[in-house]
Length: 295
View 1 (cartoon, rainbow, N blue to C red):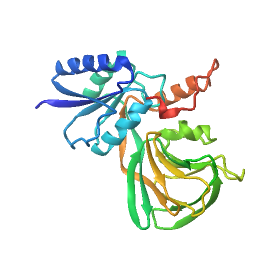
View 2 (tube, rainbow, N blue to C red):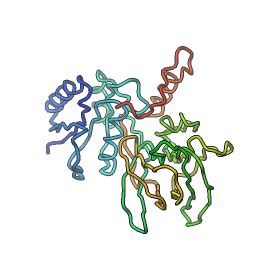
View 3 (cartoon, rainbow, N blue to C red):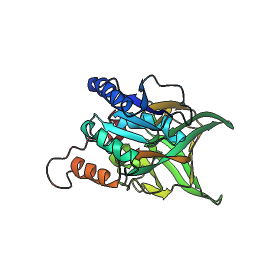
View 4 (cartoon, helix red, strand yellow):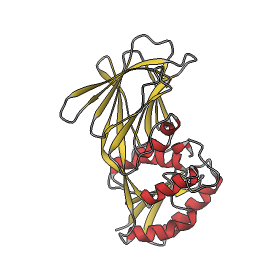
């Protein structure tokens, strides 16, 4: 039976097309049928069971795009890095064959990354749904930055916890994978990517005592956009999908029932990236606080 591979290619990087063809040819020699798609144009959901492995060719941003399509199908992703040193995309182009052989032999390290489901409820109706690997950000879309939000958590047992009202530039709900992205730039903690936790991080809060909170991943987070706003409000998912919000909307974030399976992007890779980007071992920091925005 022919095995199949799906290659997501960031066409904005000229070298990705060449590498995709090279990988496709090599996979064909190993009995795999490879389908190459541009990540900007892949809009139709993939069929469950249609593929055995997927590749993300680009930077962390390409992995974020790939994760929203692949994670629900329980297909592993090999993140081949053609960007700068990424926190997620960790396999160098010259390493992919060795890593692939390890995966085929069952020896590759598989990191399971927490994903979040996001929905927007408006007047009792769900008007938007998405999933994310990094974060969901509620922020002002206009010049007047300050917005008003109410946040509560609902535990697995159904108990509701009022986390407070926030006057801030916005609010970030981030996964451990997303803790090194926008959230860390907004003063949030860096969390080990294998942990089951979610960060709730106000952006530039009016009250300085408002600090980031880390909660269990099985809690449902509800954020209410209060009625009186001086600015339009926007929801941004993984820095790639945007949805306008109305006063009175509720943004619900919850743990997805699946995780992203990343090949060879384990805790060792994560801490290596931290040491390099944040210069924890000395030298010049490469931190740009873009996290997963490098496509």
